[in-house]
Length: 302
Image (cartoon, rainbow, N blue to C red; front, side):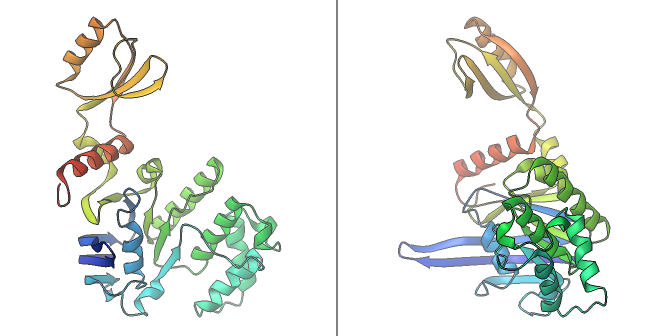
């Protein structure tokens, strides 16, 4: 059974300038035990997709189902725990109180409630702050508490908007490990992120959305393999200035395999020097290429 499914979902907003198509016939599926990354530029439709999923926006076309039931049915959404990009926890509460409240709001009664909540605070390395007020915690620790808040209720589907925001490198790795443990236990994750390296290391598949259209759905490995014939050249030159400038007289240019020999000959004629050549196979490089291609073809382009 699919954890989450969108079928021909469209949403149009009305503005003074006319109708704005925020989502255009979006189709996607997230399976049990799968991590699905959702990426795209600002204003692409990521937040609208989440709001439709959670029935915050309900005047849309198409169908959304959660474990086989319509997301319009509040009972189906009990399977979801949601973490917004900027968590709004009650600042006068302590982390322990926040987690205990989450259990009670979800109708979960446990004899070991305090110990269970304390266990999750320990898992996210915020147990030493269990009795402090949220307002006294750093941004990174608030994010950890918010993540513990989503997992303490043991949801079947996690919906996370920028879950690693505000965390230091150690914290990011800790959270990645916890999310992967959750996945291996059968949980499904739908998450957005602007940090494409996080998508590469966490997601089984990802969807790239731009201007309300789901451009592609692939695994990071598949997409990178499809673009493996491109290379990034770092070079120095005082007379040839192409691509991205890194520092004085040093540039970076992306080229496909067929154009590389001729470009290197031209660089040689200009007295330039190659510093490095490596495949342009990161998800980040592919992301910008797809964005450029989609912008050139206009809405509806692939």
